[in-house]
Length: 276
Image (tube, rainbow, N blue to C red; front, side, top):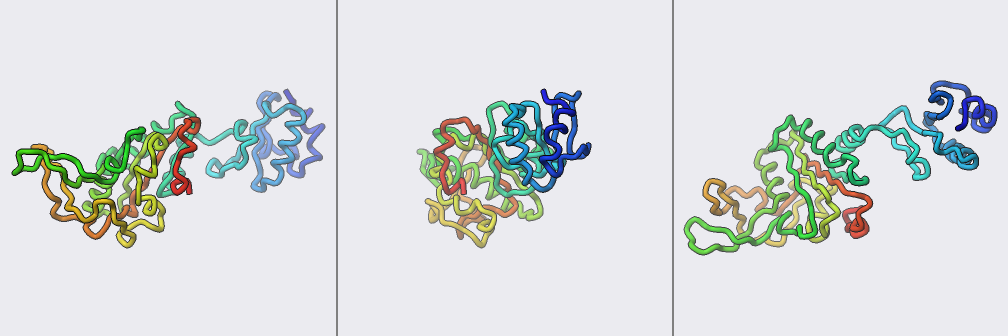
């Protein structure tokens, strides 16, 4: 391993900022170097070039003192002293209205997202919804579809228009009419479903600028009456006060959070409209 003396002897003159300054360099028993990168990142290629030529990358950890500032570049991310997953997830959820977290299985993406959302909602289950995608998941499960139900005055089941889990959650938000409240919709394993079929025309509504009642879209069964299930007896009845009668929209105070494994072979099949 490179020592503190070796480093300054061979490299201190090659990098303007590489002075014996504890605010830039830290040492682990004189065997491992922790380099706190300055605000200007132009020195990074020089650092990488030096350490790679001397086969010392495994003994170097680059990091930023500000954990909210991302370090760009795949060459040294594996050697980066990164902020905790809680910090990454919390900052991203706060900043974005729609975000997808990727990473290897078992890194705690889903668990961290759910715990942070629960904490933000003070365990109020009306403020968040969780769903896990799978290959059989489709538009009728997510947005709306024609499904067999039992009507109160009918003997045989009848096909009617019912909300999917996402549209139902959006309807509840609109009905609650709390614009200052933040709601969360979590989609686990988002890349395991055919997203173009699941979201349909809602791809347009996901972006922040296309949210709200001024940006409605007509869904596939827009001109049919919407029904809902009465939990008391399992029968269906029409929705009297339909907030989406003039078209569906995603509320502005809804945050959509996805998680996915970046080593899953279905990653490449993610719809380009969603990637954008």
